[in-house]
Image (tube, rainbow over all chains, first blue to last red; front, side, top):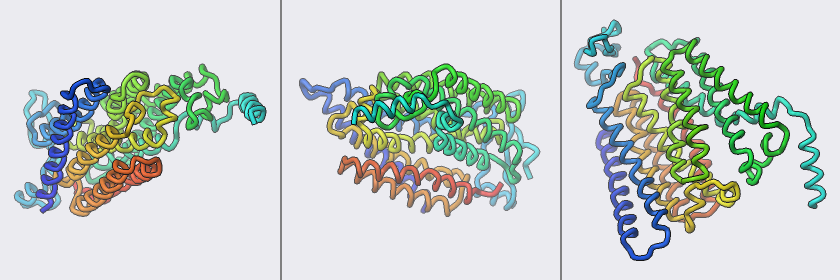
Length: 105
Length: 301
């Protein structure tokens, strides 16, 4: 249920953003609008949240991994390994590969 | 009346600088919130046992850098502060402190903070601290006179403290740290837009190009407030989705976010100063409540 709510709130955001962008783009196209510069600035304002969320989505799905990134095992993964108290940390090693660290139980 | 005001100004200017004036330069309430968010980031980034000594060093270093940044910001904005009702009684525009001692004070705090973080925490956190300082003082502050996008840029240094806390604990960046960043980033928009809308005339007097000042009818401000609130809600749920925090946090964050959205909607429709101030008050309560829930319901390491 939590997952569904999370996705619903995300969809709500993108719907609001799309509606807002559409409104701003239509307003820009209308002739002789004073405040055209203001609308350009507001379009940037409107695009920024999507850019931030897109970057965040990439990072949190593990599609980008830089040096030192330490993904943490989720509760389902811990349960599957049969260790209620474990929290596996993967560490970065010199050759760029990742390997289970000393905290792995 | 004018004679009385003049006499008062002369009296203020004649007072020697006090410790309280130097403290005021550091914007203690903002610095406290910065340190609290850094501490939350540290705790969330820690394993089962929290290294309290390192935490204290991280908090102290963050406090020094935040204080230094606030001080340097006031040095740079002393002229515009003198034109604003909200800020004309600050130490510099009121003449209780001179420019050079304040500049030296701010620089000293900033250097001390960076040195503390580098020596007692780790270089990564020190770099983030210096980046925060540079963005706030050298980028955001000058841009306030040029473009309303300064608010977005200023939200970046405003969102870095919990990341600093995280890196202080782990000596590494990770996706979870950026989730904390995003929460603070999106929170700042309705918070700051409410301040700027409630004090729009004052910001205009100060020459600040913020969205409510350039937005004649308040429609853009209302739209952007709502957009960033809609973005904040799913982002605020991510700690549960990523197993940083648990179920209690999830429902608490959802309730807090729904409340924020409701108050924001009212402010967006009403566009009155009382409604903006109500939104501001809610935003001030929202963040500490969210961070408290996140830490209390942290998924055990």
